[in-house]
Amino acid sequence: MRYRGSHRLGKWLEQGGEKLLDARKDDLQVWYAAQRKSFCLEIGCGKGGFLQTMAKLHPDTTFVGVDKMLAVAAKAAAGAARQGLSNTTFIVGDIGHIGELWHEPRVARIYLNFSDPWPRRRHYDRRLTHAKKLALYAKWLCADGWLEQKTDNLDLFNWSLASLAENGWDIAECARAFAEGEPDGTSLSSKYVQTEYEAKFRSVGLPIYYLRARPKQAE
Image (tube, rainbow, N blue to C red; front, side, top):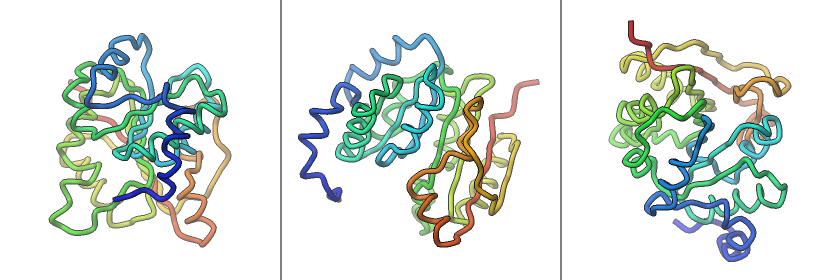
């Protein structure tokens, strides 16, 4: 699939290329090994608006965005570079490839914002809250880390709640059709930091669903 606007890829790479890592290359593992503090990870970062806002709210925290499409990740990286957001990094690739490289719990937050719902049953294994994906997240999250999901898709939301419960996760918060609020600069929560999609959906009156969960702690 060709990304709309990808004819600008060269410009985006020139502007944000230093912020881009390839999940299939050694530079990602070098970057990971060099991290001395936990970081926050958005899977399916799109154009990067959410991460840019989070990076401004929390300048001492590193925010990492992942997207499968080079043009999408490059546009996000270029936007962050233009704003001088030194605490952002973007990865091009699939989280399955990343899972082969990351073996230590270094992630403070995992954000799943308006992910593809993959509505056909035969594609459920592609959902970002499928059991195989949850196993990766459990390996990556720090002991005090959290997974957060926001979506406009009620079927995906209910399915995610069931998948989390079935795979040994504690659900700390479940908010259905919650009202928008002001971003909290003291919290890494994604709840009140809107993505481009959320702003669009709210403008036409669609309800937004949110959950926060973590793997159950060993007794």
